Picture 1 (tube, one colour):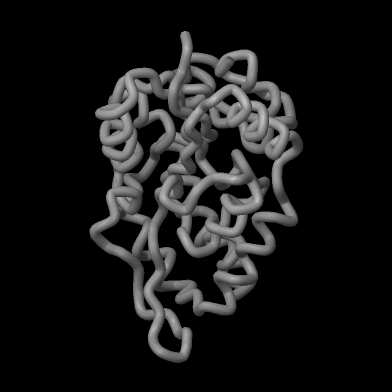
Picture 2: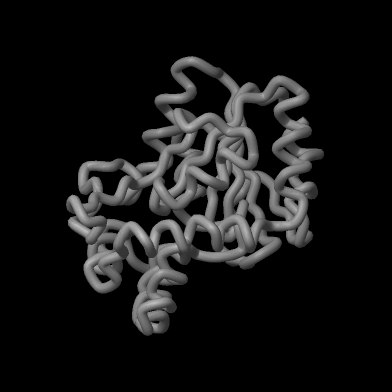
Length: 213
């Protein structure tokens, strides 16, 4: 199938880290928060049950978000730049669709040549001195089914869309008619392996290219 639009998850797909978990590690809250993240990614808890709870525990300020942005770049998955460059060279429109924090993902998107308008993630809100105030609670990506909503919106303009990701929330894109490429190069999740249209376990993201071109 010829895809017009390719959407990528960020955490454990473009970068080896789970961003919110790493912010928790920085605050000495890793085990508590990672257990919540895993439960959501494995389909044991709905995302909305864990999203606000994790951020209220961590309360990331502007400096923490800048730290995470650099970590995403430092821990970029093998082959990501080559994969995105190849897709762009073939005229594909690339989007990042993530339940992560948008301000932390934007520098990675910029490095990959993905326009800011094509980054769909959850905005963090700060006060005048950069302290945590909250997050965009009405973002579709902070609740279950959000990735399907974003993909439906994109498919209004483009018929053929593929989603590449590692977690249960990425499988939601199938509800919007997306072709789901499961990426297990960082974390293998049995539910995703079973339900994705295809699944790759190589550590390099370039393994997804044969399914997208």
